[in-house]
Structure formats: C-alpha cells, structure tokens
Length: 216
Image (cartoon, rainbow, N blue to C red; front, top):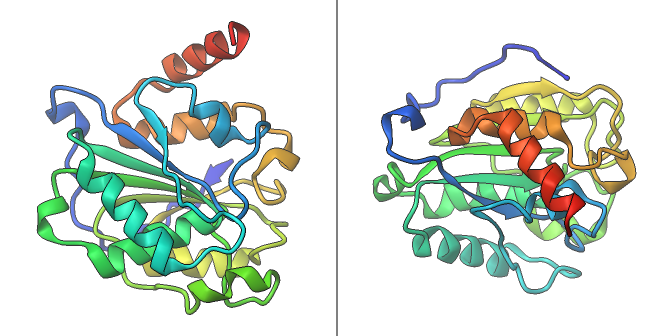
C-alpha cells in the first residue's frame, strides 16, 4: 500500500502522544456484518477494540445505524478512533455530518475508513438508503484506504470521497473490497495505519493480535 499524499483542510489533530493513554477503537462493519475471516473480526480480539452493533445488518438504514454509532461514541469514557469498513465508512461520515459538535473534539480523534462503498453506484440496492454520499469535510484526522478493483466503488470515486472528506488516501492496489475474500488475515498493514491515529505502536498491535489468534 502507498499513500498518495493527498490531504484536505482538516483541523489539526490532537496528538495522542500529548495524552496519557492510547485511544480505544470502535469497529464499524458494513453490510451483513464482518464474518469470522474478516480483519475487523480479528481486530475485535484486541484490547480496547469494540464492534458497534448496528442491529439490522441485512437491511441497513442511516436512521438506525447513525444513532447507534452516536450512542457508542457518547458512552465511551476514552478517546476514540473509528475503524470502519464499507458501509461503516458512510455511517461514520453521516454521523460526522449530522451529529458532530465541538463537545466531541477531545473524544473522537481520528478514523480509518477502509473501502468506503459508493452508495450512489447502484451495485447493491440495500445501500441506497445511505445516498447521497455525505461529502462534508470530516472534523477529525482521517485515512481512507481504497482498492483499485473494489466492486463497490471505482477507484476514482474513492479518490473523490477522500478529497471531499479532507482525508489522506492510501492506495491498497488490487485488493478487492479489502474484506475476508481479499485474504488479508489480520491485515498488519491496516493495523500500522490505525496505529498512526490511536497512538499505539503498530508492531506491538500486530504481535498482540498474533498471540490472541494463536491462543484462541
């Protein structure tokens, strides 16, 4: 993977090294949830990583998913980073557009948005309730990871989303939808990207995940 260096005009991030602890991580799956072979399900084994339960995974609507994310953010007593996949990315963007206030500035410090689905493309009718794409700049540091052969979003559309959100874009090459079918395992490259936002050491996260998988 490589970053194209694209960044927007997001506010300066609150650096985690200025805090006493690393951030907790909220995992935001997409349509039909993330199965056992998905990197998100493996990351859920890590300390301070928690999957947000969106309720109806099969027939999602922003009216249900966005408030559930809002509740998870409000209930946290720790700084947070979002690690979203596919429709989870759009949920994060809609939350930022609809729910954000300055009260969240010290709590939500970043987001890793992986393979955001193009809900306007017509590929999957169940995504249409999230259209149109929310394209306001995100008020927290954001990294978008996009694949060049993602069936749910053309690479040019992923580039446009990252630009609109003011995000850094990371080119994952030809990695499909960056999901279980992409054969990523625990996706250590993704953990290292996430660590740039959370304040963790990426190699330590990868080592912890390997041990938890080995002893599961």
